[in-house]
Image (cartoon, rainbow, N blue to C red):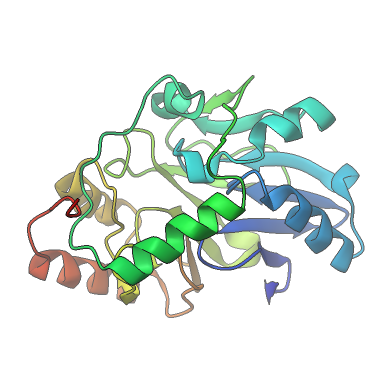
Length: 248
């Protein structure tokens, strides 16, 4: 789906993967779920491109619903994913995420998310391999020239990715615009966050970024600018209930 010139989303907004189109070349932000491979090929075809136009993959962090087709992209095209050094082991599935940071849970939204994930390959996530570590402040020599901003909290190696050429800031799970465990919409803290207070602190690192589009890992694109999104996330964090696990 086209979001703006040079900016596309793959699949439904329950789990997001994005394309940055820079002339004939393409950079992917996040690899979503394994089943998104077919959706990737279809979206590329819709804009007159193919997998041969893809030059790079950047991961906002190493959680399983962000590394989905990373291994296949490497195996078929030799493209190694860029990921923050602190999340390399996570992306290689050497680190398992603890069942914390859920917050309130509603049966309908979480069931829908788990079903969607399962039907798009989420039950068998292959580890990413041959990763390229990145660090804070680095501008990558790939299509779009994305700048890495280390925003830890959701995971130790979570990053936001600023791409001025498409007026966008990709934030992974630094925020959500559709909470997959409650169904709540609008800019809010993301569930499954390891260090919620640190994630809120990290908002200060992106607050001054000049970008119309703020693009989360889950939920629709936000076009109200970064400062307003940050304000709303902080406001929601202040009123959030204590974290809780879902009832068994």
